Length: 289
Ligand code: FE
Image 1 (cartoon, rainbow, N blue to C red):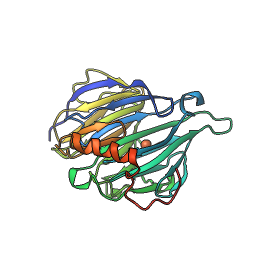
Image 2 (image 1 turned 90 degrees about the vertical axis):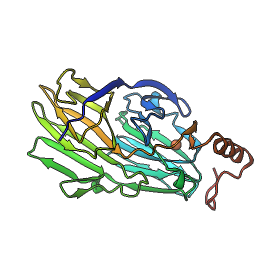
Image 3 (image 1 turned 45 degrees about the horizontal axis):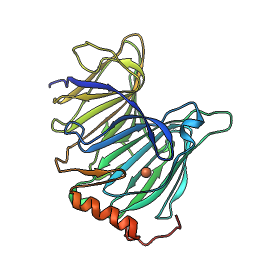
């Protein structure tokens, strides 16, 4: 077994997105060590001014998004006719495929302005770029938690740990998506597939993310790993909570502008042309937007 070394850790950066949402972007670029993932946004804030502008009606094509709300609520509507509220602990995933138009509007809860949540973009392979769009949501109760010796707690969103399967099962790139909490003064190893890309994003606390024990990495940091077949995490006096996400890279060309990610510039131009002339949506539209 070889332990993956930390290749780099990067602090997330303040970004304005949507209609003026102030969020932290962990990454938002196509990179061979993050492939098939394209973006991870952290829209956690205690101030509703940061998130209330929301993400009004906008299109997507060629990707899947996975939104995980740890605290607070986000109202969602899309051109397929789906609508609802994602609440604390809930996950929604959306396959844009050939095209979807949706809006995602964070709301402040009475007397509790805190919002905590993440959106991950997973690329679609060329063979699935134009698949039918779909939307699924699951509630916090449906997400299993694996408890190891009362020291490590793992919410399994997708993938499998000790025979416990996460409920998010049909994302095309089949990622493993875990929310891990580790107690202070503890170490934890997790097997990963050798040719998969793996990253972590620290939600709170701090830990060493490999066995060199060089640097404690704390909240709002993205951790990108080198090759190997095991992840090793060690805490000191603080606990740590982080997302651990991995998948097999697609190794395909990426043509990306805003909310649309295709393989070629021509496909990209076509998508924007279709959006302008009203032929972007391929599914029979069920709602006005
Ligand atoms: Fe969106």
